[in-house]
Image (cartoon, rainbow, N blue to C red; front, side, top):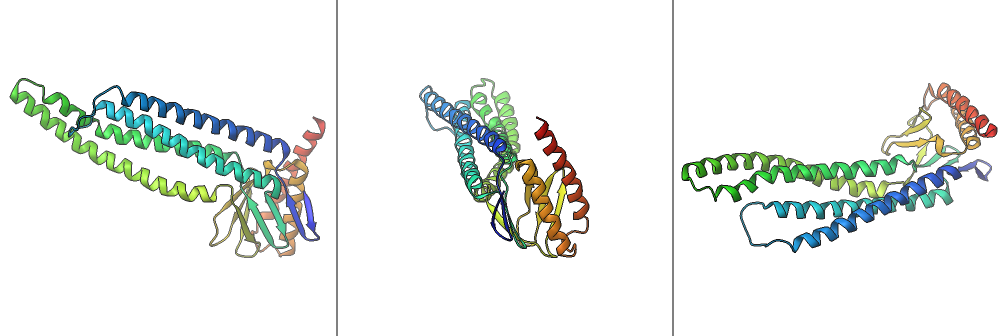
Length: 279
């Protein structure tokens, strides 16, 4: 913790937490780059193994080729999000993750949960694209129905394939819509990932502490979540004490139950500090 002015306090990411998040982030980044390069090279090699004449149905080779390339795109996109977060982590390491200046609270969320969120975003996009391919798989049947020698059986098989293709196309369009919407959301997430937000502690601001996570809600601002475990044990106690003092000075207008929540969090922070001393 650093006190830059009589009424300004800045709290920094704990050394152990910074090492853990940084190591986790770079391992995740290297894994994404490796996956992207491997699938891209496999796609290039596979492209050269079959003919590419134009047909009105999906070939299984094209489906596999698209899957390999989409995995590469997802991995490259995930690595960009990870780099954005690692840049924010570096800024938070030097500029602090919490700043309390009078009635102004500046918070930067650098929790490792951000990296897990990136993984689950990649996972969701992958399964949505797989749903698109599965929906298009019935069109592969047309390549087989044209080779059926019995005409009535060929017509019947073509009609069945057509019905399955229409139903699959609907499913593919729905899954594709989710991919587009998710892509728009990811673009917004990339700008907000690890960004700092400024909140004015007033009667319009709500603060809550649950499971040692500080939540700040202010109309017109995104909700901020600060995991207090990111701070050193001493800084946890200092920040909570300052918030309690501000809360009392403001005549408890932020959140009526905040005092009890801070008291419980202070007890937990003191226990954590005692454990650190014993270790």
